[in-house]
Length: 105
Image (cartoon, rainbow, N blue to C red; front, side):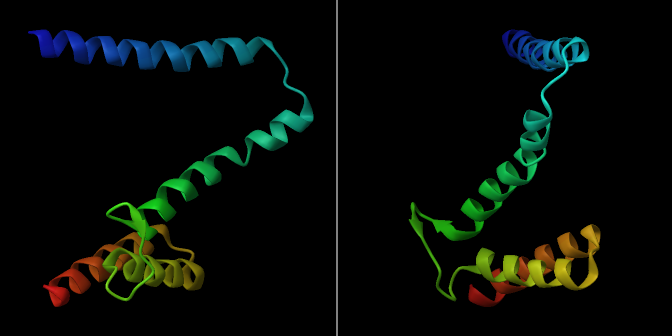
């Protein structure tokens, strides 16, 4: 029962946080410069998450050929660049990661 209370409380807090921004910015007009800057937040955050996951192994930057995630990420980036297809990029990256990890074991 305690777990359910925690899960519901976390869900309500998350919902309230998001709703507060919707209600606040629904009545306030942001300056044009702030609107332009906010457009770069999602790609910046996503890049920080992706690059950290690809490059950092065991607390250190790993740019070696033994870094399976980096190799699979490079292949996925190539597929994304050539095809502009998100699903194909994800599938190619995941397949490459599984294959590389299988080969390296």
